[in-house]
Length: 178
Image 1 (cartoon, rainbow, N blue to C red):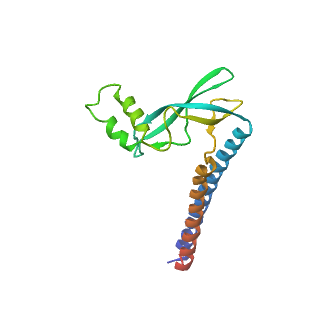
Image 2 (cartoon, helix red, strand yellow):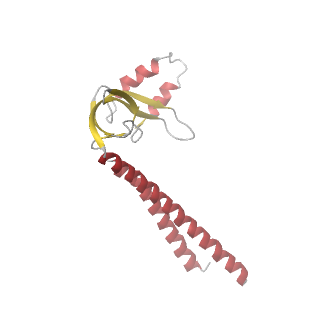
Image 3 (cartoon, rainbow, N blue to C red):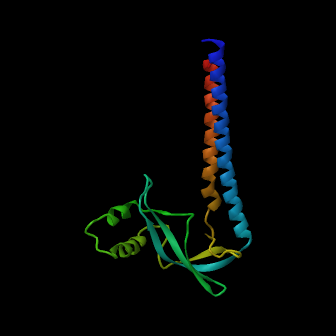
């Protein structure tokens, strides 16, 4: 292999390494931003009681599983809000099969969801939950005592994995002499 080809390989390796690091930093930034938003909301929030009134069914799309998002109803300053909670979902795979049943009469899906919500452990329709609701925007809320920070840790984990892979590839290429 001539010197020019070796130089090009080294250049590609450096570019790939920089790309891994850049993506990892982007993932860290997303995680940090989400945690910052959570803490900002929690600092400037009020506690309200909310009733879980529904589970919003999202069918599977683009290879992702179907999900059920809890829908809460709560009142802030005399205004009643009905909001879907986006930070935690229930696996709705079993509901996909029910929803796609051609013999399912119209309107029966909601009834089946309510029945089946009684069997899943995460959210129960009709149960009261304590929410931390943003003072500036009551549509932004978090369920009290939920581990939102731990849920956002996935961004840091993915970034760490990318950095570890980058280090590993760099180490292998140095030992291989590439």
